[in-house]
Image 1 (tube, protein in one colour):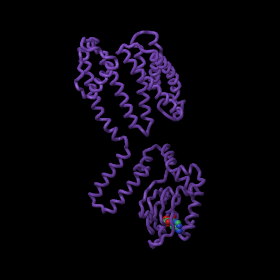
Image 2 (cartoon, protein in one colour):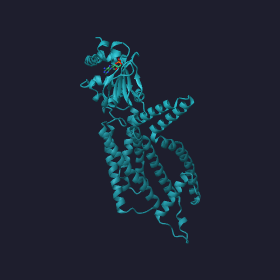
Image 3 (cartoon, protein in one colour):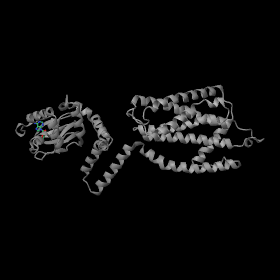
Length: 436
Ligand code: CMP
């Protein structure tokens, strides 16, 4: 299913959910309060039935795609069991859309439309799976939605069991329908939330039994709320809680190991920088969890800005960019850090995504040059298999990408243009050390 089509179906689902919710609220109220619906409500009834008919068409169109999967070829056939489930759902869609309530006068026919809420629940589950950005917020919203609907239904049940005699005493005139409903809703909310002030008490055996049942349900709901909503709220900002947890662990560790104050500050600065720039996430570990096909796409996307800016990659082929993007590993250096020192053996070369580094001569004093965004360094040691010809010191926070020797050699072999460019630059920088 194409993304735009999916969005269109999603809009339709939201619309359908609104309509069905209206129906599920109003139909029950009408049944228990026994009021004669005004003309506007009858028009709404007709509109709802029309929308349900249109939804049958929408579901039929949708059935040709594999439900719940984006980008799945439409010729892929579902298994027999899945096809059977589709048929049952589709049968229910048709049954609910039939204008039976206009033809027959039994209470069961308007109630049939409430069955459509099962479709709404099904769609909600799918949204939650597809919506990666606000999944916790969605869960919370759906939870509140269902609780509100259940509270309404329970209030309607209370009203249905409310004997008409109760409000017919001589002393007190019977309250109007709105007041009766509001009191019933108040009863259902206090009972569901296990608050139960006891100011509205059941009358008659049926209401007593009903109250006990709702109380038991209330205990379940309460347990669910305590168990789930607390974690849900805590997880609304997963990244921040993850970051806080990491920082606390780090603080304990640093105190325990008596890390000097200056070094502690640098460690904190490093994590603060990671948090500000990447929400504290390590790009490589996120990528490592992905399957190959997705990993290269995500890697190219994440590194596209850098690759587009770096002169070395100008005009590079798509395959080359893909391969390089997949192999680059991000690293961060804080101001004053040495990426490596002259004389060390080198196993990596580096590309600067953001920041400035100084190339310091082996005497440790002379700054030969500075390199910035889009530049690279560390190639000479890899090309010549000699120790590093200079030290590299970060001037500010630097986001670098590193390429290991094995991949470097492989890339040089595979892409001669890239090899020529790198060798040319290495020779310009340090002619004695580069051969071949
Ligand atoms: P390498 O010798 O592996 O490690 C030090 C790096 O500094 C070196 O690779 C080059 O990438 C870089 N470098 C050395 N000399 C210069 C220079 N004159 N100008 C720019 N970069 C240099």
